[in-house]
Image (cartoon, rainbow, N blue to C red; front, side):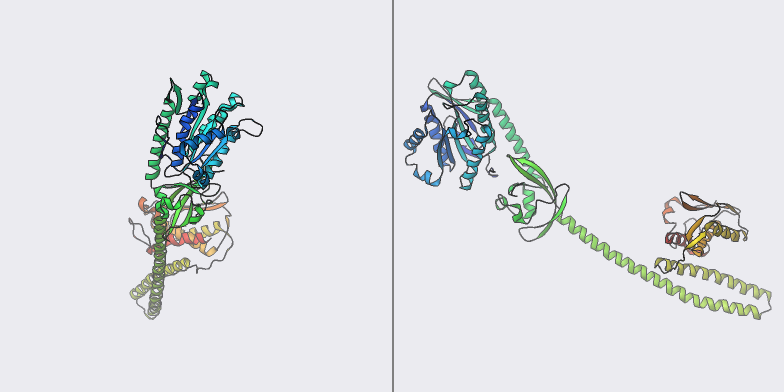
Length: 535
């Protein structure tokens, strides 16, 4: 049966009832060596009287040194009518043989289970804890190893729970070696010398207890001061056993409001965060909704299997993240609207300019046919050429707009990229451009032949325009790892290193050169990149 220590007063001071010892704490286990039954009455009567006054459940397991009947009589003489305690179920005196299993063998876990059950029963009836006295020596005492295992097993249980205990040993039945072995495991040992009770304090036990208490105090200080929330929950039923202030602040409850409650009462689950941090939604006491990151770890706490929940409050972070996401979405919509406005403006601008350009071209051609002047003919021819260049630029803008909006149709078929590249090279060589080519034969690719040829023309003309006077453009087409690769290089001034990541932007020209040709508005590489990506 699972029992719990009271989280808020587990180290509270309790009166021992023995003037030689004074006040003690929960978890104290006293050893007493007695010589006769009067020694037992001298210590155990005031010991239990103090426990009854302090609302503790009192259990006296006695033996043949002082029988059950004699124990009742001794208590009655000292305290008077015991009926109120019996009605409340606060007092019980049993024969120590109940510590034995059915076959008469003393087994430590049997005694420990009995203690745990008695404590759980006492706590259910509202008692502060358990006050226990056990006479470990009886006429049918088992062998020494089992006897010692039981005594020390009980000592270990007592130290972890709201129990105060005295284990009594018949000094006349213990050797000097026995006395030393037994006393070494108790913080206090009572023994009568020259007619007076004396207390022997176990220095090692005292030192360990002080160190343990100091360590726990340091841990508790850190536990309470951290801004990370901690909640300790019993694994079997989800009962909250411990919580620090940071976690209480996160859920909006006080310690008194949550201790002993099941964690599901707060709308929380033990399933989250089993192996990695999990974000869960939590409703605070005031009704506000929070978001917590929870990690669940298995721990053992006072012999109970528990879960330690490590909790971080992500509420503000999630709110900020949500607000940022909403702002980003609004910004994206705004940018899309701005981009669409830009495209509409460019489309209208191209259309508005194309009409007068067409008229200018037509008028120039009519003028050329009707004039006999060589000078005027040369001017009209120049007008036609310049209008053609401007029309080429506008066509590039329209093509870019169609690419961006997915309105540029592509017809895919198996084509020879080598033939397409050689045709583009031949056209440029006709313009007396120096081109050094290294073209692999039959580079078959599935592509739109017209658009692929356009890419080659853009790359070659772009390289030629920005080459040094008299310089050559190098072209290489090859197959590597089942990929067709076209490389174009020139001996021009190049692009500044800090602008390399911008060369495929629309309307971009390097800062160290002027824009030239259909690309004169910085679209050649932009179109080439997007056409290849369409493939």
